[in-house]
Length: 392
Image 1 (tube, rainbow, N blue to C red):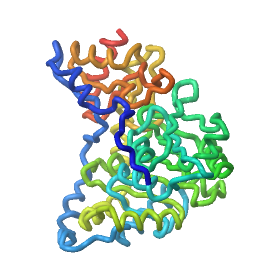
Image 2 (image 1 turned 120 degrees about the vertical axis):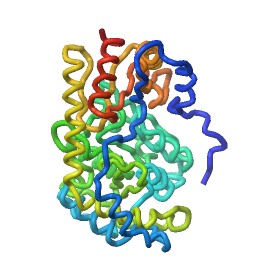
Image 3 (image 1 turned 60 degrees about the vertical axis):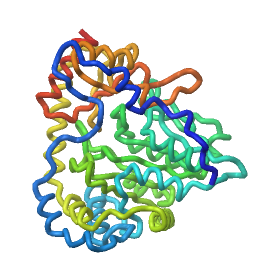
């Protein structure tokens, strides 16, 4: 495997640049951060009890692929949520979905395809680990615009056959970070057809699947099941961080075909760290309970309604289908972020930091991302300051 000597083309996602821009106190307003997508809603009360009851597990080496009880609970949740039958041998527990999104590519993407350097497709903007995984695996990242003209989803079918024939993996995120758009069942089925035609796998990042505004997003597992797709075409990633407000638990899940999961499990057994058994016990309880998920989603839906009211009548501002971000149009995202901080004390993330510049164009440049993770009253104050400062 050819490991890059340096990652010289990383996007400006790194926060040191943002901190440099915002290195002095704001002129007005109590500082309020809406940058990071770190859930702040309370996690279920039973988490502490479940952890206490399983402390003895810290004295044992945990199974790398996941404890049987947790794998069974995940399989049951997938069946209830998506109506798809995914047995335990098609599942693997991961240390959060980020680790899995990275390691899956190393385990499954070949070093050559058709005698040429492989290609990894990803939407642009994107979660940076997609690009890092591709570069580490020696692949060529191809950034496909996911802007307003394509419904904020990448149009992979528009790519030249030469690119598609070299593709080993296509990443997709639904609900999308940062745009909040949901890939329809039709979009996902079409992507599976494209993957079958050009022989690549679809890596679907669904970590925001349980946070939606009006209707539950379809999942790739259910679409593949109904579509009759080869299970080996599909690798789906999810986690408890957003669903259950436990980002520090670092417990995610990967679902795929038997062969793909076997290869991922093998890589993890050699080079990965297993999730400790007490944390797996907590995760098992979380996957078995849906009441806290419904309550959590209701809190976000209330904030979506507040956002609709705050930005009512402001052309170009739309509400997301899922996730917990607003993707707000501005003239220049970085300038808008600095202006907001200096004049109101609100911190947001410039959209360009989530995207890569290709042929002189950055699809995130004219946006800012605002996270709706703080308590409702604090979130509404932040949204009102954004409106008054940038859209007033």
